Image 1: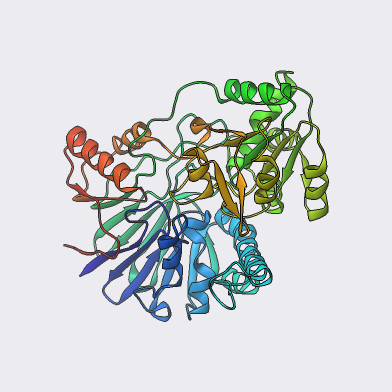
Image 2: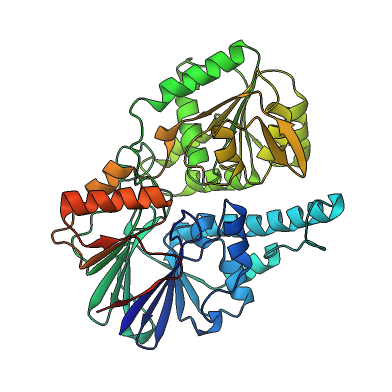
Amino acid sequence: MTSLSFLGGAGTVTGSRFLVEAGQSKLLVDCGLFQGYKQLRLKNWQPLGFDAVALDAVILTHAHLDHSGYLPALVKQGFRNAVLCTELTQALCDILLPDAGRIQESDAERANRDGFSRHHPAQPLYTERDAHSALRRFKTCRFDEEQRLPGGHRLKFLRAGHILGAAIVQLDLAGQRITFSGDLGRYNCPLMHPPERVQSTEYLVVESTYGNAVHPEGDPEDLLEDVICRTVKRGGTVIVPSFAVGRAQSLLYHLSRLNKSGRIPPVPIYLDSPMAIDASELFCRQDGGSRLSKEEARAACSVAEYIRDAEGSERIIADPGPKIVLSASGMATGGRVLNYLKRYAPDPQSSILFTGYQAGGTRGAHLLAGADQIKIHGGWHKVRAEVLNLHMLSAHADANEIMLWLSGFKAPPRRTFIVHGEPDASDRLRHRIQEELGWDCEVPEQGQRVELA
């Protein structure tokens, strides 16, 4: 008997964790952090719902923390087997997981020093050292090459687009195939390849981040040009809270094209995020993981001055002149961008430019909803800057693109499970799949366990 349990990424876009039990084998697909609303973040501290020691393997679709960020905590709880992923996913996790540990340690230290935590003392979920322990469990696999798993099961990674190394996961278990879409990428992205088609599967787990939305048409460079030019004209600074992996490199590509063609003023452009800098350097080194050659990638990333140390951040913040600053994190949940928001959110001459999905409960979601003040590091800060979101720069497939990917199946899956979306997005996608494709599909609940006949 095979079962599938939805232990994260159900009813929300974060915390992806799917437990597959087949015979005596226990496999976890993704091991993500819950992010956003406090009631979601608290789930990171709750019991897993399974024994970490008993897991035979963890399989990662990609490196973003809502899919990989709980791994150090899992290893702290006794997991000692392999974490299977693509080579570029491991390379990105080498960057992301230690950084996440450092940020959690820093946040706990600040909370204890400044006294704004309700926990005494505040503790990190895991440390940088824990992250390095988790990274020692990683084992890489090539795309399109079948891998043997404990219990005689088989695994194959297919390209998902989205970010470097992102994969669609196919599991063949006791004569049944379960396919996990992971996060699907765009079909018209200038940097990443489109998601690979899948022809058949008995069971499908598909994401629905934008299941109720279609990305606006239009050239993102036209909108970037407009925002930058009007902000600089009024003497302001453009602050771009940017996801360090994927979005930062996409922004650098578009900014380099705008800068080269003279469409934006010659103001300084900074990438102030050690993690985004490391990801950009990986992007320039990799070969074949994106649509750009190494030379094209290096040309794009060279448009910005890299800022690695805190003293550099302080220098930029103290500079009164117009500039463009890309800094993590993309939903303004942590990282150096918070220091920029404290300085520039109250400035009516400046702009805060988001470039993709903002999970409910994050500062990014609050700002886009029109909040007139935001809380950072225990203090409240007024919001007078112009706040915008360029959805067309998202690395996620929208509803039409998800439906396009689904149309590649030669036969309907027996059952389709819609995950990794807010309730409205998941249910809207369910309705479209049922109406347009006639498939048997459902939106599972958090903690639900289903038997796969």
